[in-house]
Length: 532
Length: 89
Image (cartoon, rainbow over all chains, first blue to last red; front, side):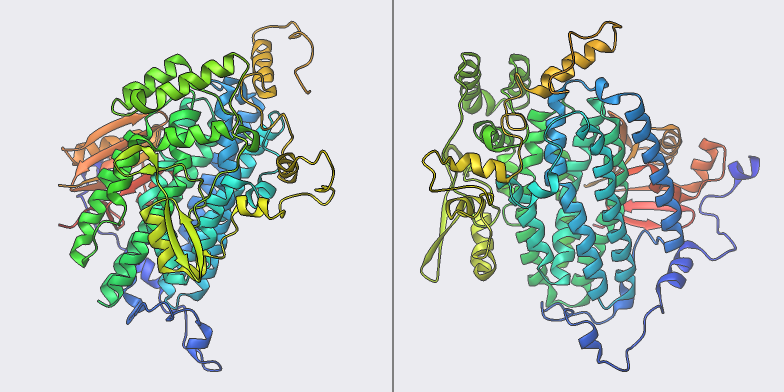
């Protein structure tokens, strides 16, 4: 004890130090090929225009070697599964604040977890294609991390699938449901880019600038609402994200230091991927402000801490390389007042086509919104929400039966408003080979105009429905009573009238109340729970 | 002036780590949230293995922080004895 306490700070050790061990374990592991030219072994290394002169300059600041990686990851897994088992064994779901909370997990499982799997594939691919060994080792670890995230999320949330609706067909839905094309197309866009663009898209813009907004306040909120399972997988995943963020930052510094010609290419990717990622976070804004029954912080507060303060510091730091904050940054900061309310309004209207429950905020929750959004909620959103709540109470709940126009790039319905005018929906148009394409913002229009040949190929759910591509094999469009929207919902594998019903009166709501009563009583709770 | 931060899951190990950070970085601001604790320091923070070992009363490998870590910001520089986060101005 004494010798530890009295040891000088930054004492040196005799065995190889961390920097030395890292160098020994990551250098000299590759070789120059002799049977095949190197450019055929690494065919994607140059076509994006990024110039790299010395891969040995790449250094992973965490200096994590493979042996240490396995040791700490194994420890994380043991902790995580112990918590998940304990949570399930003790009927942890009955400790939730409210079953409304579960709907944020349904969105997470269908929208986010499949992206973790795609990130696993993406980093495996990029790790294979980057010619530098240090970068390859880091990508390999990240690929394994992402696979772990997908698996732990599925395991944790599968416990809820035994008891609650809407958790059953997440993988099937991810490839089909209208709003799930938003996160899906984001990752498809990244993984079809070259390896350097992928590193900026996922490693830098998504991991460094944006994942904090999902995995920190939302997961802290999961804990606050009694979900130890989501808390455990979320924080366990984010502990890997710290490494991923550091990798993303290293990737960008490395590209910028290697050749001045890389700067404009990198800046364009930052502009593009900041905006792509920000649009996906629309779902997170709504989860924080509307779907957590007990709220940790508002989207606006989270944005101020993790984007404005932290992202601001980052871009100030990168200014020495000539990097400026991404295009669209100011608009994203201004829109923090409106994003969550505009998104929740949309999901409320399209409840019939979404496999999770929606509701209007209670009077107390609307007061919370007024307090958190004093400059926007009472003026723009409270009147609409109070009207809808009244109509719902009177048995006249509003459903929008018309399919929305989608943005060609982010694939979100045209729900965002003009910069500076929250009363007018924003529309942008581009012409390409005689066709008109629609986008939701200047950010998405810029992305489209730069690579139209990529985005004209988008699989847009609304267009696909109208073209008749979203019905099951037994649907008969010639039948007199053919109901196209009902057929689409069936094709999504939603349990019609159950998964896509309003929260009020839903089977989840009834079961949760009945099961909660049973926790403090020995009497049967008035028959078996609904649907059991 | 920019802020660096680091956040940990709330547990007995991270309690010692956070005490070590606040001892060694007098301008640190500790921000407790449900199930997590976030520490902000202007410009840079250094975490010393030796201070954590004093707080925990046992040997500690700085890479053990990975098990409790949630997130961080700033450039990382890590050795066996020190872990530094900083923004370069």
